[in-house]
Image (cartoon, rainbow over all chains, first blue to last red; front, top):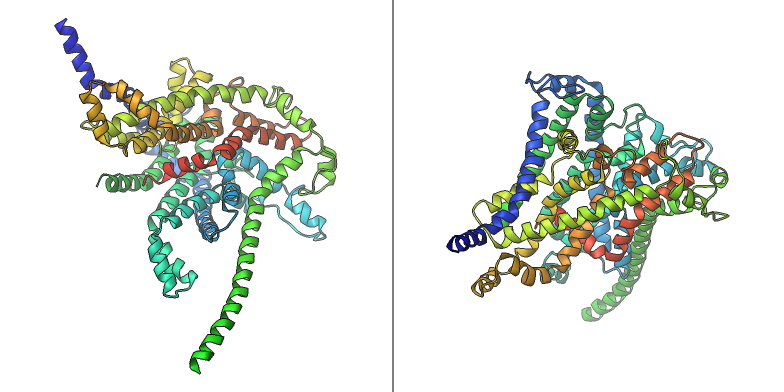
Length: 296
Length: 301
């Protein structure tokens, strides 16, 4: 009797921890344990099957000597840079245009943002069709009489990566618009009114007052887009399949190809660790500062 | 006299200003509509292409309306298109996606609600640390876990199965669901829990009769977020499924890249729309909550 009440008291006191425990254990094992496993294997000679004898950084040496990985990294710079800059510019422009007390704002916002609800595989499939040189945009414009018009980026190794940018921007810019629009709306109305009363032109109000006060939102948008860019996988698979050749490979598709089609676990693990390191370097400081300001 | 000239000048410039304002206003609307066209064009092309015959696709223009509407491509995409050696269309895979998404959404939402409730209202030493670790776990590139996960699923006998995919989606979804609920519950005053405790209510009783009834908006946001994420997932789907258990995104990619027979663009487009339909529908019906989830997942402020 007494034992039972002590038991239930103990349970009552510790129940919050017990509820959280399974999730926490799962995260520890399946996130941090798995990262450790991948890190470990990236230091071994693993090929088709994992080996566990650490031999040092040979996988990373191989990785950075591989021309395919070199292409993947270069593509990440080109794609990531353009994707982030264009999405942010377009998103900001759309947000400012929509902020002018537009009567149909709700409808327009819905239209700008719907691509974000779709799978990147769907987006890739649609753009693959539109950019198809034989039947898509090139075909239409030739049909209008410009017989020598060429738009074969999708199958041109030099330009194929830009088609990934086109589709990626189409997918994500509406989302950036939503972020910026929320930011524009949160700027103190009084300051804007005061500026208007002083006769300061609208463009100047935006460039000198509103946009600078949205610095944290620029940072968030930048982090989110960067994160999307590094993780980009589906879009490339659906749009170009990494091709022509491996001209549009990104680190994510490289990792997948080495892991599942080449059966080179060591290379896959080391490339995954490089991706992890990049995300870590960007996301951790950001989350840390977010959590700290939150707790203050 | 100077007063008079100032007044006429003001009237003149106001009229001029009005004309300029109206012109600017028009320009604004034209610009906004052009952008709307840019975002709608791919959807328009997908729909019109899916309603055309192959013959018409070859001879006609990408942006032209179909001369003769046919739903053949839709029925092919749904029930007989080839995804590799199998030719049963998207139907079985659509069903797989539902079988994966529904349990995974429910389980990860329930866990997220309980976790968020503990972290926000039953603080103990280390709770914030645990929250940070969970939060960071939802931002990792999943490439870093797929190799060991493939082995662990194999050891558990779940490799290539639907329960295996449900498991994976739950594990990597709880970080976000916990974040959503934690941020929501943190705004509820602690005095509520204290008062309920004085009245003798326990942990689950307080959750069930006080917190849950307040939670409808955040449940909607979380369910929509999780459903969209899981339905649209491709990486886990392609890594951890086999011939009979692939989700719809993987099947769509297989249909599009299948090399058997003539390239049927109309079937590809119909299949793409079918695969996108559930999440698009959710977006149209509950867009407000979708956007809230998106922004909550990125700006934790």
